[in-house]
Image (tube, rainbow over all chains, first blue to last red; front, side):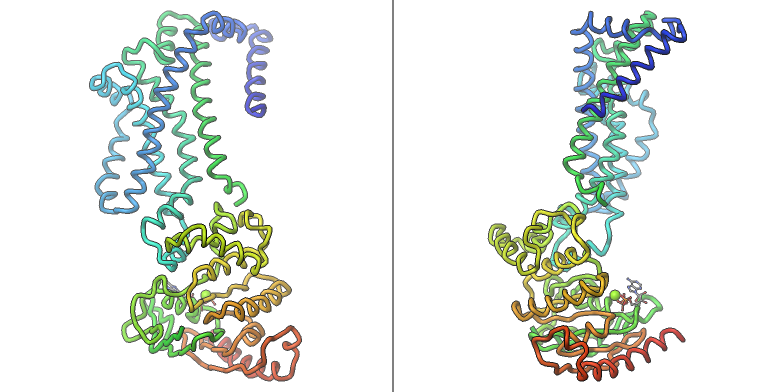
Length: 244
Length: 253
Ligand SMILES: Nc1ncnc2c1ncn2[C@@H]1O[C@H](COP(=O)(O)OP(=O)(O)OP(=O)(O)O)[C@@H](O)[C@H]1O
Ligand SMILES: [Mg+2]
């Protein structure tokens, strides 16, 4: 906890020192104390934005993680399905998230699900690819050993392939955590009234510089929360990696 | 379990890895297999374990019967291949889990066996926390937990230092006397081959064939002094000549 907090405090100190030392125009960079005071003054408002965006991003992230891992396992089990579906996955990723977002909001309206869907769209693919890479990297002698014990596909998958792929799955999940946040924010740009993305837009159009920086801090808090959750899960599940 | 191998060969594309191998092993026998690197020893084991099909014309019979071999023999590959996310006990329990044996009784059996394998107090340790010798004992214990009459051990002590290795050899004989399985054991070490075996089988350079099949009639139980006994050195000289001849061939080939 302290290890995470210290660099952040240091960054804030640098920020404040720069603002004072270099006499920066508050239009470009307001003092952190001013930003903090504004956030404190409107705490419920910022807390609401944090929670709204966090739930959108977390839901999309969870769906992306599940579909990513699940699709990779399915592809491994049934290569025919992989040959048919993986190209579609790849093509889907060539559609810019903005275009995709517009369609999704048309379909789902301004709902939590719409933003989660956009976050999902950005997150599942890296997870699929990394899970596949992790499974491909499994030592074939390891598979042979399990087969010599009479293991079938399902047991090999559960007892060997999936656990072996975990380190790479978590690499993808850490990347996906920030992508999910970006997806949720983009989703909010299509007419949402709550959330960090909506707040960012409003602050930008109204040239409320302090509020803009406050929104950025809230976005960072959402990203940090997701990232910390992934890191905690990783430490619990991939405890053996650092010793390899 | 009686094992009969006859006319077993294997090609990998253009490479003839194994020529025609004929070998019979009696129940409870301890047979060691030596031969130059690349002569097809591991390939033979892979076929005995059912992981690889012999080329047409070869047959492998267990107790006189042909049939699928996967899951019939307890196979220990050249590397320990322990799973880093499983502790000692769980690694040893892997074959039982795959077989679907009742968890509690397997676990009780593993806890008892861990004592014999010198792993008491390390049951909860992870492979990364163990020495090479211990890892090898865990891999061996895993092979014993897969209760099959025929065990295939591919250079189980290959990666160990000389001291640990000779301790492990005596210990393995002890375990073997206690659990009485049929063992086929690959090694590069002639001393080890003689010390352990009822029979030493020497293979030729690639393509591998059986060059020499030498019964070892040294009394059991065997101890470290045996290595310097005249009977032992006489056998060793004989085997060295055979092995040397093959190694030279593999270098000039
Ligand atoms: N899957 C494979 N595909 C192609 N060639 C192979 C394969 N497995 C083994 N070979 C070849 O077959 C030959 C015998 O290999 P094998 O591993 O059985 O030798 P070995 O006697 O166990 O050697 P070592 O003592 O070094 O372990 C080698 O030339 C090897 O390159
Ligand atoms: Mg080998």
